[in-house]
Image (cartoon, rainbow over all chains, first blue to last red):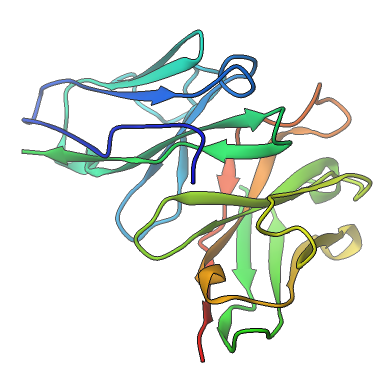
Length: 110
Length: 126
C-alpha cells in the first residue's frame, strides 16, 4: 500500500479547475521534491510536473504544482476532455530507501 | 529523442522466472540511473528497483528484495530485471524509467523520472 494518499477521483465541467492533493510524510514530501505524472487510458505514465512546480517542455501552463510541508497539490485549469486521465504524485522516500507514488486520482471531465 | 523499449514479458507459472529487458536509445545510457516501475491491472504505480549509471548502487522495493535483480549492460544500452520465484501478485505491466540527471551530477536519488517506456506485460498464473 502507498505511503502517499490522493483522493480517488475528482471531476469538473470543461473549462473549470480541479485540484488534486497528495499527502505524505516527513521522509518523503517533507524532505524531497515532488513530481506529478499523467497516465492517459492505455498509455504509459508521462512526466507532468517536477521539482514541485516546474513543467517539462511541452506541458501547458494550465498544469501547476505546489508543495507545503508534507503535502503537495496539482492544479489543472481550463479543463479539457483530453485531460481525462489518472494522475500520480511521486517522490523519493529516505526512510524506505525507495521511490514512492501516491495512490492515484482519476480526473473526469463532466 | 529518448526511446525506451521493454521486452521479455509473458505468461509464467507461480514459482517461475522471467528476465525483462529495456533497450535504450537517444541519450547517453551509461550516464543515467534507471528504474523499473510496475502497474498491476486496475491499480496504481508501484516502484520496483533502481540502478545507478555504473551499476555500483541498487535499491529494491521490499516486495522485490531477494527475488528480483536489476542489472545493466552499458555496452548494449540495455537494462534488465531478472525475476525469480514469481507470485500471482507480480502480475503487472512493467515499465523502465530514466533518471533526469546524470548520476555523477545528481546530489542523491532522483525525485522523478523524465522518460518512460511503453511497458511489457507479465502474467503469473497457473
